[in-house]
Image 1: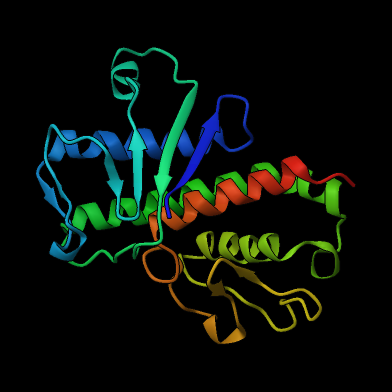
Image 2 (image 1 turned 90 degrees about the vertical axis):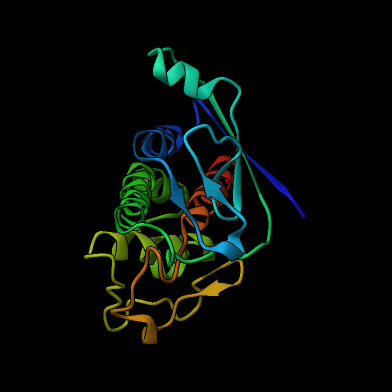
Length: 205
């Protein structure tokens, strides 16, 4: 089932997602063609539209034209479904490294933006007060900023609140494992930010 994800100009994570989007959409136009794995049924060419990364489609609505002409972008709209996010095998090395790096920077930056608001709404005692999705996002952020590897220290997981999001959960056994392009794929980062943003919008302390 397809899910619509929108980030508007005044949304908390609009800026980091737009930076990710703008850099990623520009890359194939500069270095096209780039090919994804055959089972993803996606081939990027210089004039492609619609697919940005596996599992995620975007609605252009003149966004590329606005970016090219230095005009403001006020909304980004994505469509996501439950198809596999697909790994980086089969893509060019530069392409794979670029998307891996961009996803880390986007998510790490976005979580830092949200940290103060999270503490305001839920308190400073992360392990006892933050909901499961934010527990999960916290450890994803740490992995993004520790060489793209989980940095799960002893007693750092909550004993009373799960560290889960969608069909993923973080365990001590994940320590040292790769985060971006391993545990999480590019579409996952955008979907997680959207869910995190909605939690912060709706919750009242």
